[in-house]
Length: 119
Image 1 (cartoon, rainbow, N blue to C red):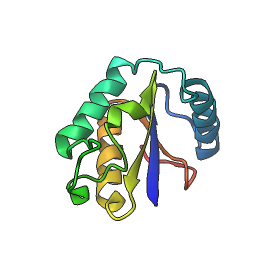
Image 2: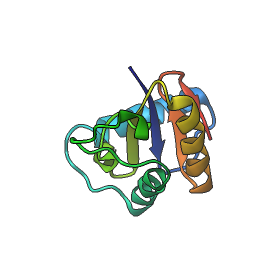
Image 3: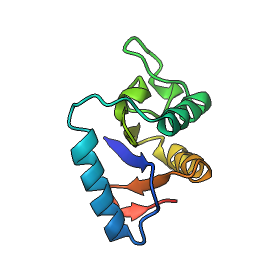
Image 4: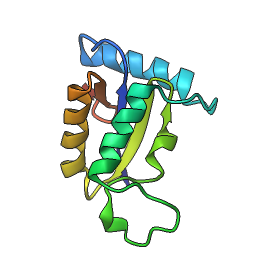
């Protein structure tokens, strides 16, 4: 089981409902397998996360070393959107950090499961 977050470039939506619409639109446009290069800001955001916790590779044996549910993490980024998962046992530590980094980077952070903005 994983806990997912979405982070994107753009203006902060005025409500959780508006954020869900923006997320749904961005997901439909950028996560459909087109393979759009991540923007520079999204790439920097991902780099900040893996600077805090190591990225995963297919041969990682120590699953407790990182909260990420898959890797490399940058594969979850497309254009202005980054949609990524954390293992459920570690999300309580990683999600607030991810939201703080998004906020300080001028990015929007959204919890699709809870349907709420985190930044």
